[in-house]
Length: 176
Image (tube, rainbow, N blue to C red; front, side):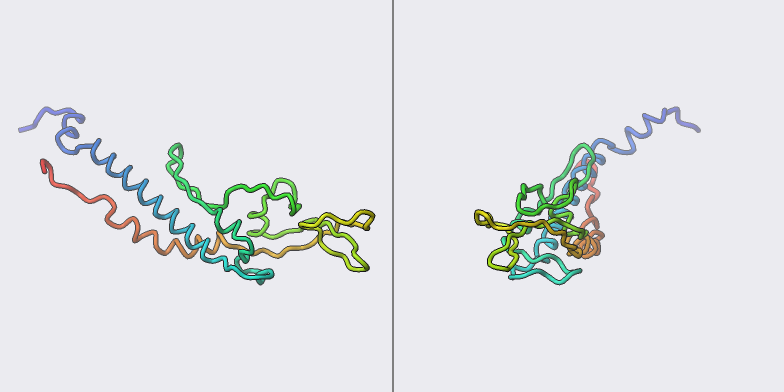
């Protein structure tokens, strides 16, 4: 004998769709936040506090900790995704090419212009110093090799993603 139930009647008794989708949404947000936090931690820890430049191909050194301490993650509700990376900072001393930020410049490398002034026969980069009155100044292009930190951090963190998602949504007994 056949039962006369519509598709909606079947699903209303078969599955509490609202509860399942709510549980999946809640687990997705929680897991994406954990993934973002994990990636941020790996990127921050890859930057060592040292004097001098890092070797090309290695993460940049955190001289002032400005870049390292401004790496954040945020969940975006409109796209149901997490964004991880450095916050935009106003850096007036380093003249990176237009349309590029200092963190992007460190990640991918490139050519930048530096201002220098002549002090008794030596050219000194005028990063924090104003050139003395009457001193000769020049702009010079400098090739900077990439010092990636977000790309390698993403590769390291991807191995943990399966563990984060495992058992995210656990079935519960009906009526419990």
